[in-house]
Length: 398
Image (cartoon, rainbow, N blue to C red; front, side, top):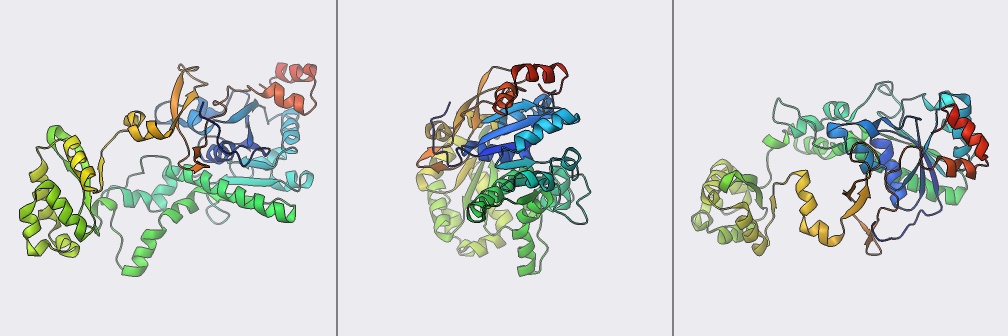
């Protein structure tokens, strides 16, 4: 486990009805900041516990520092048990289709009648409007919101390589919760807040929308964009390795040429300024590539680092487990897996990219087993052992 950092939300209770990535991300933020986060799952467990392939990391990544209780909300006893839990909560988070929570009396309108201090965080595909009935996925909003167009090559839209909208949608939900908590401290009342995948994606596209507004030119996809810097690209070098190299100012260009022995290019008057170099960019990049093609990526990285220039080796996700900076700064923490064939195995997970009082927010609780905290939580509500046994025998709780 990682060392304890500041826990500014200690004492706050969050009950989350979430699945997959977006809602669980919001809960994880609050949990990492010290809140007690209770994950209400179906009796069989949240579906992402059983995902394979690209979804295999969802549950262990986004459900640390949480407690688990399994409840069958489709039964009246189950829904009433969930309502009793939410009556003790400061925050409820959910990310189901519009209308789902109301079927069980777990929507904001119902819960706030009992608990007017409640902050209710809904995570949806779209904010209320013409699209709010649609089923959204990260892929859907990337396609319709311009991100896939900007990421892929012309005519070949491509989703980003991670769940950017799901994750950021959860982060924005958590930001709104924090703001609502401050407001509640002033007024004494809670509120409903909403975060949405589509609006998150549109926010990400804001810089390109404004690029069009400012220049009058349609933004080109990133692989074909009008690059503002001449040397800003990936080069293939010795043994097929790849490395990103950049020189984003005229001063950096001169240092770049000196470091790599590009005296002839440095001496060309036609390449003296960045804008001049952009006019000659295809020829320039080809000349640089030919000059460095027999050097290794490690050699070039050492040269660039010594010169103080921007560079980056091209890595795969698994390479990050051996990153010296992450290992030295505590950016990875131990985590015990709760599900699947690797259950019980300790692996490394990533932490939030900030410090509080100089320390990273760590892992206090491993991702929970389904229903790991059911007895503890129900007993705290006054349920007797016999009552819990009865609920479990009727498969209402797990």
